[in-house]
Image 1 (cartoon, rainbow, N blue to C red):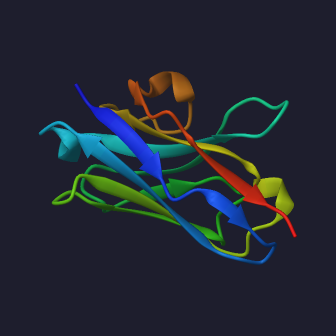
Image 2: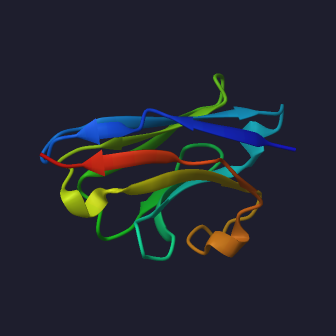
Length: 123
């Protein structure tokens, strides 16, 4: 079992930065690929970024590729999403998720989910 709790969301101005954290419980955290997804109002949830259990490889969607960075600290059971150059289109609820598998983009592959944290980009 893995329980996930996101934090770090809030209101930020366009062009600003924000770092989300996802704390995991469970001694097997380091065995899971961790992902971030987001869901904007009226839209389906979409893949944002993922990182392998070792941290050796990460993935991100084209819409955030040059602006967001995913990282993890297995000693702290935490995964992070550093978000830079935020724009109003990034406004969404951001979810952390965990999968024991290697396929990272479909949300159906993820076994555990957090409750989400709201990110609002507005002036």
